[in-house]
Amino acid sequence: MFSLSDAQLVTDPVLRDQIEQHPRAQDLLRAFLYPYAAPDHDFLFKGGAYSKVGADAVPDLICGRTPVLAVGSNRAPVQLSRKFTHQNLSDEIPVTHGWLKHHDIVYSTHLTGYGSVPATLAPSPGTRVRVSITWLTAQQLAHMHVTESVPAHYSYQQLHGRDLELDCGIRPDHIGMYQSVRGHVFGHGNIYALSAIRAENRRYPAKAQWEIMALFAKRAKQPMRAEFILRMIDDQAARNALAGQFTIK
Image 1: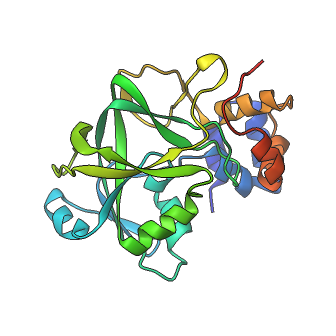
Image 2: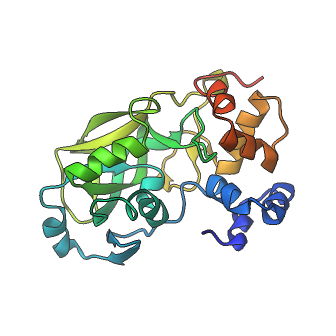
């Protein structure tokens, strides 16, 4: 459950009021608050909660696990809880943090089933972006593939670890990652970074979630209102019709 006070993160006053007054406010908050709040330190997620861990504890926690880049909501406890806490598998997941050089975290050109415009990774020479790594067991990785809609929405790839600097000092040779198959180039060659993710020397303009949703509404020739997002949640065909590289007119 999200707090209605979190609607204040949507800076458009009309849209914010629609969210606060709507009977489906929780659905709207789930869409608009992506990629969700997350701690900016290494932690162990377990049982729907998380606890901070020191660098000296990380090697034992990650032993035998696969490092997987979390560029969007997978770094957030609320999303890890939604994906793993009620499954018939361990939900104990170490999450480490660091910086990735020459890349940025940008919006994909598709909508999720819960109405958000999700994240993907894009090359960005000279940029340094804050990233998270989930360390998964084989069973957890298989389940994560399902939650990421591989291969319909994302492909699972390997990224070389040379540009990754983790706070704990560990340097994996390769990191798994989910890369959008829909692309990340919007109209007129535009690429948009997530304003919720910290970066240095960012090359791409950054937008909040509600601002990027407005591009999809414009493409659909609809006003940017709460009802547009709810239609995208409820109507898979309408969502799919807006997916992929497109030109905003």
